[in-house]
Structure formats: structure tokens, C-alpha cells
Length: 68
Image (tube, rainbow, N blue to C red; front, side, top):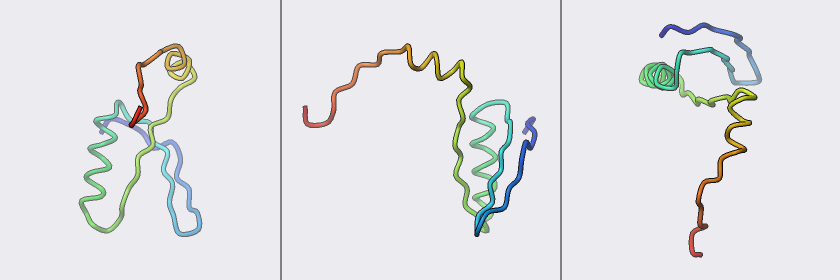
């Protein structure tokens, strides 16, 4: 997928993998392929860089809570 494995951890009954992949589509494709085996299930958590978090804080999306 053009990425690299950063870390691999075992926990009580779980495995955690930290990988640096080129983009979200590559991460989704890898997750879908692994999950399709039926042997394991995956959850992908996209991490933000400090710069991405700073940009997000400066954005002001319009939002109205349901029922309001």
C-alpha cells in the first residue's frame, strides 16, 4: 500500500498497529482487505498532526443540533 509499519503492540486480547500510510483510501483498502478474511476485525483511527488540529480549530462549520 506504499506505507510502513511504525509499531505493533500486544494488549490483553487485542493487537494495536500504528502504520503510516499514504492516504485515507490506502488505510481503508488495507482495513477492508484484512477484515474480509473473516479472521479478524479492524478499526481504523485517523490521527491528526498538530498542524491539522490547528487548522481544524480555526474552522467554523455551521451546525444545528437535531430538534432545534
